[in-house]
Image (cartoon, rainbow, N blue to C red; front, side, top):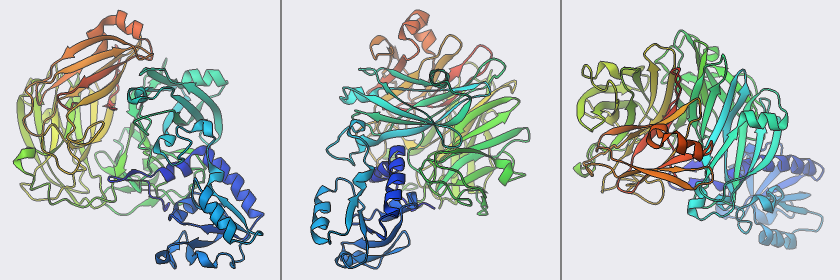
Length: 632
């Protein structure tokens, strides 16, 4: 496992990790490693405790000794090296000292004065990105310097991909945002590098695999697109939606969203295949060093008998692992746990059935969560507490299925109930699922829980909540996989998400969350892409409330064109605990949508409550996609 600290719920992301993992930094490490091999022995001076992250990400660095400044750390082992006191560095025999830090002008000068002239002194500033690639050149480890992400990107076998987002940084004061992009092929080779300016305002942004393939004269490819946004403000994560679109005889259509940007030890929410399906887990190396053979494994959730992938995966390379290759005989609704060793950011998986494919993602399985005794004892002020809202699509056309997924390494049980609501927020009943064990295989078809004829045309929604009537524990990281199928079985889509506390005045450990600022999170800012002449976009908006809140939402649907100009605005009122299906083509009409263009979008805004939403595309032939929305 890579010995790197990437993210935690208190401090957020580790900027040093992102600085070291940047593809340009990886290139510079290769140059530095070659230079150090000719100047050994090499000592590493590690004043801030980053040796493990540096050397585990880049084992090619020929470091043979480690020195520290804090007397408490002398004798500690980092990356297999025993820490020695800095006082002994001059007499250590090292010919080169690498200071493990950025913006190191002052400590470099101090070392230079204290060490013999025969010892060369360098720092991690050797890995710095060029100043024109930095939002804040004065402070290298400013989070805004590393607003970056990876996207699954493919143009092959009749399938193309389209990454869609908006210049939401403009709303936080950014004046001139641009993207530096790099396309990696399946073997990790660089297929293309380019820059692209964002609109001056809060306009839409599209990276289309077909256009990029034609622009650079590429053949078919399946790999990853690295996106680095420069000149940003407010957010240091690149959020996006990505559509997989089949053309001609290829009838696939699916969508997923931004990668997590932080590697995890384990991922969960990977479904086993049905007898007529293949499930492929796409492993995409997020780092500039190969993943050694035996570092990745799959396990039947709850079995604790992981099966390793006995082959390496190259730097920035992509490899599809057939679940049946490592775990033959597993069948839906059994679940698979992916042990990634922190080598990849949130992986995608692909389900192939009946000649069609759909893409979704697994989720981070938390290693830092323990059962929280405060959740069963939550006060009435927080009502039903944590809940996971999920759509029930119109029953005349679709089946809606939910599979609860353990999402923490210590999670041994899931005490759960499903609450059902129509579009006007009226209760359609509650169904206790029991205290499910970690290794459960319980997929719930909501069809079996609903009254006859209910939700036939408009649909509604369900909420997965904790229910402790038979005991059990909870950690607040409640997740589920939601699968939707057309009645004739010709097409399906799936997504997954986790629970929050929604729309309460009182707070609990950072809940309710907001898209910006501290809790309580009582506002909505959701991004809804537009369709095209072949496919219409839609959103299923849910007004969940853990406790009673305002009777109806005061929601605005704001249509923007590709440059961020507002073209029209329509009001929408959703009942508390209700939902609404929104089709921009029906709300605004074809003329306005044509004016908005291919980069246009709808901003769903509400300052009175927090809505949650799912979005997708649908075409006249019954193909559809579905994933949860992102906000900013």
